[in-house]
Each structure stands twice: as C-alpha cells, then as structure tokens.
Image (cartoon, rainbow over all chains, first blue to last red; front, side, top):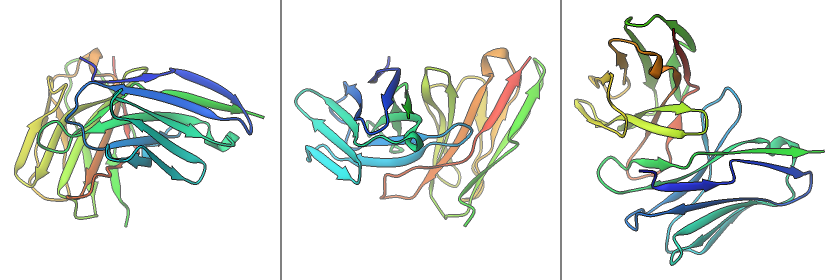
Length: 113
Length: 112
C-alpha cells in the first residue's frame, strides 16, 4: 500500500518558469516531510524539508507548501534552471521505530532552454 | 569525510549466485538503511539498523539479509539471486535526533 502519492511522473518546464510537484499522504502520524533531489547516477540528496506545524518553508528558489488538513504538500521551484533537471522525491517520516522514510514514486523534471 | 560509500558500483550476477553489497559510513551515524530503487517505484526500504547489533526489516526484506557488527558498516547479503532483484541499491545513514538521511552513490545490480 503506497502511503505517499506523488504527481506528476514527469514534468517539462521552460527556463525561468515555475515547477510544481505535488504529494499526498495518508498516515497522520508522519512528522517530517523532506524533498530529495537525485541526479542521474547519483544518490538522492536532501533538498528541503518541513514539519507539519508549518504551512510554508522557503530556501532560495525552492518552497514547500504544506496543507495539513488536506494531507498534501508540494514543492515549488521558482525561476527553474536547466541545472534543476533531476528526479525529485517527496517523502514522509515517522510511523514506527527507526525513523523510516516512505518515499513517493518520483518526478522527472526537465528544464528546457 | 567520505560520507557514505558503497561497493561495488556495478555487478552482474547469474540466477542463484550470492553476493554482498558493502556500505560504510564515516560520520558516526547510528541509523543505517538499505533501499532499492526501481523505475517509477521510488525507493523501497529493505532493512534498517538503529545501531550496532540491531537490525530490522523494512517494506521489502524477502531475499535479503543484513548484519551490523560495527557502527560504520552495514552490508546487504543476497543469498540466491533472482531476476526480481535487478535494481539500484542505495545505502543511507543518519544520526539521531536529526532527520536528514545521507545517501551513498548506489550499486547497480543486474541478475540474469
């Protein structure tokens, strides 16, 4: 049973545009929601993260919007650049011992010139 | 610090062979994780460890085994390789009470 649903599967954005990736979760026990960025041939790396007591977090061109009542959160990439072309994973932490992360299925972003 | 290192980078196995994927971290992290990544499926947790001598199953443990004899090392063992185990395997680690997991570069495994 997939507990974190991510959309879209792929996304093409023009340089300078806004990229938006959405995630929805089911388990209200999740307490930490990170976004990971993965370049081809590399391991995922933490991009930005949020806790459920905050509705928005911004770091440079990257913003997480969090809607606790709807159990949804999204990543916004402002002024998208070709260097942002990567696969993005949302995740949710909690739900038992080990601080385990449950990942979404990923979004392949391509930023075109 | 090298962070999280994984060996080998690539491996081709025949059905029924066994192998060990190595993972080492030099950050003195207590938590370590093994994931597999398949196209369109995200990352699935295979096993995890909260400290030396303690391991537990994740979402997809069948066909795998782990051990954690030291803080630094967390090897993943495949005993009888099957085509369904063709995947990219990532090791990760983190330190409590922080949430960020640090990932290794991955091992691409093909079972033919």
